[in-house]
Length: 501
Image 1 (tube, helix red, strand yellow):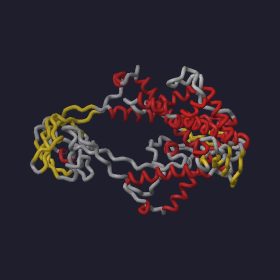
Image 2 (cartoon, rainbow, N blue to C red; image 1 turned 90 degrees about the horizontal axis):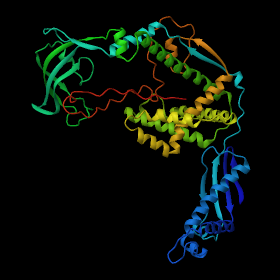
Image 3 (cartoon, rainbow, N blue to C red; image 1 turned 45 degrees about the horizontal axis):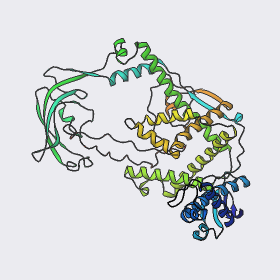
Image 4 (cartoon, one colour; image 1 turned 120 degrees about the vertical axis):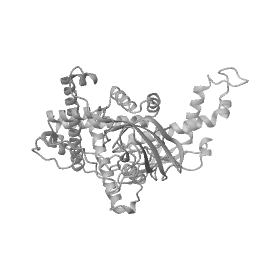
């Protein structure tokens, strides 16, 4: 084997490798010799087929296998001799005509190009100072969670026959929907329970039933949304003849021992303990998000080395493709955003470089400290992923088992979390009490000390949107099932968010 370095600029390498034709022929002869005892051809006794006949019959196939194996072996040997680690799968291109090589008349010559992983000098992790925001679970949060749980399991009790329906009440109705006086498919239901204000039906439907009482018949005039899932109904005005049979008022479940046992808990105190643990687990996960963001920022800032161009390009392409998909889902175009395309590309380029840099650092830490994901951990991760697809568990399981790249997607985050834990054990980590608002904020936002007491829980704000000020796309309505769905509307979707992790 002859190795010729064509170029070596920065981390990029291009080499040309030549394998003499005689070496290929020798390997082909050895392969034929290995199999001749098992080859069975018509007209020959088993094991008695002449080598020349095997070469004539199977020579092209066998030489193809020899060439593939030779390329794999010689390229790996080259990397070993040069003590270089490719950042990604090297690109290999055969040089010259293939037929003479297959005939054993010409040398095998191929070009191989790749980027290498640079030498990385890891910082002293004991010098890393991290802040872990913490929030104690107080009983007020447990009470609030219990109240929400009871509210979600609310029941309804009939009001008087003359009671007029209010927002939040439930009405039992029959309805027939008509367009231009003709009833349409899926626009009829009997004995349907509709909670007024739930947004279950298309806009305007539920509002017109407020003030009705048992025994009333009312024509509800509404227009189907332009984006309604059924094209035959979209945008068309309609009239629903509605008969109200019963008006019921909401009644939250009473929080007591019976309520707890109805949820499968031994007692109300056990239910409170379970809720307290769940809130604590949620707080811990949010706290870890802040801690990890702090660590990754410091790892990126504390290490300076040249990045493999191919890795950065691939990462950027994936981020940019995701961004474009989100824009398309939102019905937006780049020229409608507040930032120019050049500014957005520069911003995402920085994110791509940060991801590659921190990824290489974490990989280096794992390699030097022999951190790996065990088969048991990988199996557990696979089970968790499979459980996300109820009803399709077997198909999803088989997909991952048969696709190494898919399994790598499960292994990667597990490996990252183990390396993060390893570094945090050496780092100087300080627990800092914060408000619940600070804990639920986007990781990386300023973390305040001395939290306000009894601060109400807030929903975590969305991360910085990929398309600034881009309104969420109007929801695509689901296809209406038979009878009761004609008047229903689809829930709105939240705009996807950008993540720089």
